[in-house]
Length: 253
Picture 1 (spheres, rainbow, N blue to C red):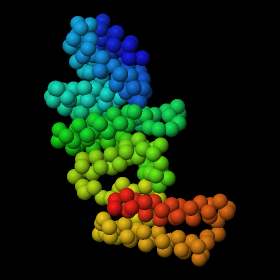
Picture 2 (cartoon, one colour):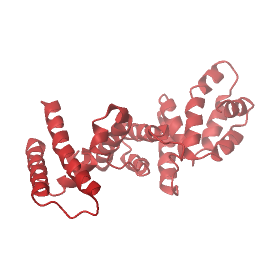
Picture 3 (cartoon, rainbow, N blue to C red):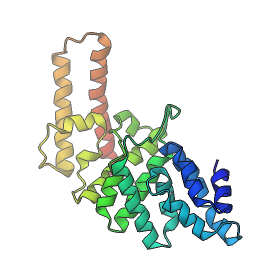
Picture 4 (cartoon, helix red, strand yellow):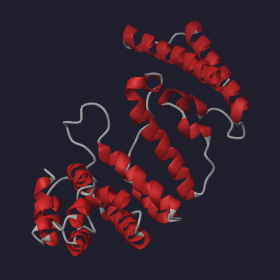
């Protein structure tokens, strides 16, 4: 697909290239643009593309999140241009109405535009553009993954994106990186009952004790579930919480 925009730029029509990509959803435009941008410098070096048409393409793409996110990593040699693209991306994210990061065809795994936006936010932070980084991160909606997902290498990419977003958000907002924000869904729910003053090993110890008490309470006074399945699912979650926390502590040791 990137052959079409490449040929349009080669023909000297950067504006039309931007208009064409504007017709695609954000995630699809990113997929095309991330393949296109590595080719553009090669086209310039061989005389196929004109640098001014690349700038024109970027100028008319100033409200396209997918294109901008793909372009930022390839403008490292031009700090002024990179800052401009980051500012445009942040503004586009703020003005976007339901940024389309994926569609029904993404049955598993995450669309690459998520990594692209995380990368753009990282560059923004590196350049000291915290407000812009925060705006970019605001459109990435990643729910805390389940404990099972944390323990399965198949989901490593999604876990790393969740952790990256949490850490980058803390850096952008100037807040401490609280370990509670890095927990899987099940443990995060239990951590709400633990004092925020506890940190590190004290927090882990308190969380483990709380999980143990909750599990014992379930054994002594089982709820009146609508089905046997819901009861055993809840017991399994408690068991996983204890097992997962123990694994995390063992890994740190």
